[in-house]
Image (cartoon, rainbow, N blue to C red; front, side, top):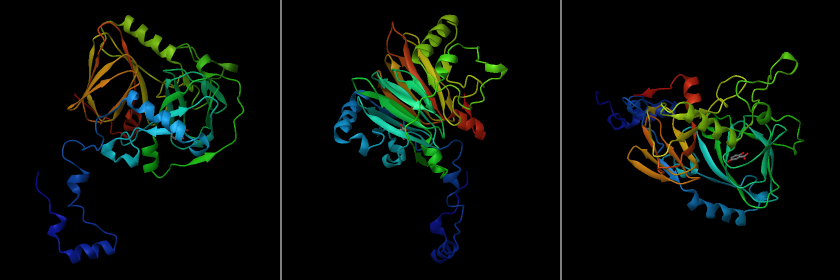
Length: 345
Ligand code: GTQ
C-alpha cells in the first residue's frame, strides 16, 4: 500500500486557500476513512458490573427526584467513543434506569427506537401506545419509534431496567427529537397474550393486524421456555438462540437493532464468528465468561458487556451444572438493510 501525501507536504497558503472555499484535499485522510482490510472501530470491549453500578444508581434515586430527571438513567458509555457521547457502540446506547415505588416517568415519544430489558424488581409497568406492559425480570418491552411511552410503579421496591436505544445512529442522522405528551389512557389489547403461541396469529374479521409493532412485550417466561425446548429438541445444535421477531411478519422486532436470547448449556463455550455489527451481551441468569479480542470479562447476573464489530467473541458458561441465559442486542438489522453486513469466517 503506497504512502499517500500528508497535509504537511502541501504549502500552508494552498491549504488556507482551499479552506476559505470550504474545500479539503482527500488524500491526507483517505487511509483514515477507508482503512485497509477492515474498519478501525472506536468501540472498545467494555464491561459494566451491575454490583458496582447499582449503589450509584440507588444514590441517583436519593440525589435527583423524578421531576428533575424525567428519566433517571446512568448511561453505560464506551470509553472508546468518549464518555460524553453516550454510546456503547456506533449505533447503540445503553442505560440503566431506576424507578422507585410510586414514581412516574411522564409520557413522551421520540424518533429513536428503544427496548427495555428488566433487571430487577416487580410492580412497575410501561405503557406503550395505550398498552400497559407489566415489567418482570428478563422481560423485553419495545418502545418503537414514534410511539408514546411512560413508566409507572405500583410496587414496593426499586425497579431497574436496561434501556437499549438506537439513539447514537438517529442522533448522527440529525433526526433525533422528542415530544412531551399527556398521560395515556390504557386501551384494551395485549400483544403478549394474543401472540403467546408460536405459529398462531389472531385473525379478527378475516384480516390480520396491520399494526407495525403488534407485540410490545416479550415475557421472559416464554423466551426461557422456548430456549429450553430448543435445547432439548436439538442436543446436536451448538447455539441455542432465539430472535425476538415481529410475530406478524417474522422480521426483526425493530428496524435498526436486533434482539436475541441465548442459552449456554452447562460448561458450554460458544464461539461466535467475527461479524460486522457490534454486539451487547447482558446476563439474565447464571454466570458467563466473555472473551472479546484480548479482553476477558467475568460476568455475573445482570452484568453487561459490549463487543465491537469485526471481532470474534467466545462466551463460556461458568457453571458446570446450570444453564446460563444471555440477552443480546446487535446492529445486524441496520447492517443488513444498508448492505454492509458481513461474517468473517
Ligand atoms: O425511558 O423513555 O435511557 O427517552 C433514554 C431516553 C430511556 C425512556 C433512556 C429515554 C428513555
